[in-house]
Length: 74
Image (cartoon, rainbow, N blue to C red; front, side, top):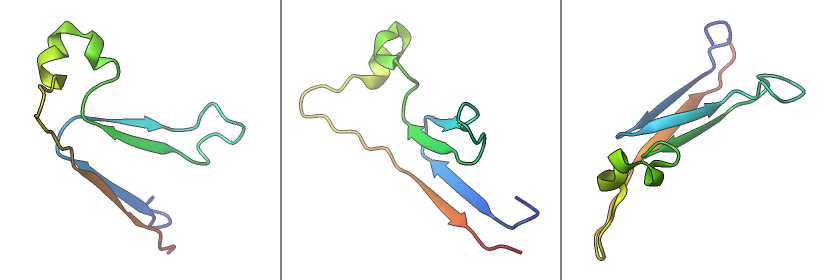
């Protein structure tokens, strides 16, 4: 927000981010939620994504993401 100087910087290695802007609550956009996910919703049901999400016994996978905030008011 250029007016207040407040900001959120989010990053992730890959994947998509779901953002809920709270437009459906009594005070729209009074808050929001961010969810970093490696694969889109219901990927396990999509044949074109099956190879991406399958883990064989003993395999491991990691997914890194983060966010920083600046809440200084100008």
